[in-house]
Image (cartoon, rainbow, N blue to C red):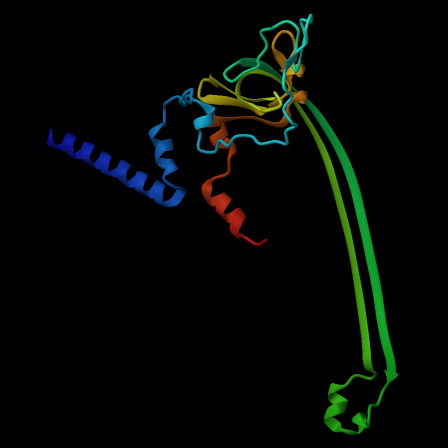
Length: 253
């Protein structure tokens, strides 16, 4: 019994030492990663985006507000956006579906060459009797005030990029600007085995661009912020180790 308790005590000491070493070398976030070994990554809790530490209300140039006025013998009023009321998103808390459709392709190539050669030769071999001095003959060259310079550079660069992303995500209206535009933000998390895929969409949309089925294309979102990534075991393997990242930052070559 005593040997079993001793082995358990040694194991706890070893785990504690490993956690302390990880905290000192790779940051205390390593403790959280070690504590999640063998566990599925946890999904983030659903919360109010406006309460996040980095959230800031959007401020954009706004036109002067138009006062709604009613005309006699008319069902239409100035300042109204539609004659009949619809169910599309229009106020804080409403939902709408963002159709993310990104198919970007860029192909750029350029080359720059530059060269320059300079040569100056005075043709002076003796300057105020310098050649008559023994030490001066050893130091001074055959011609005085002679200079040569040569410089050249050759730079090439190319970009070949293709991106494609097609998916849908539901977003929440978090703010209504004075001119009626809507600030939306949506986040989607999908867990497959031990890997989480995240999709974040945020930006400003115009109510007129929202289709009748309460969807809007991502190309019609102003100040769009779209992020697609993941975290989990596969992402951990793809990332360089902490030591390699530190060396990449510190090494000057």
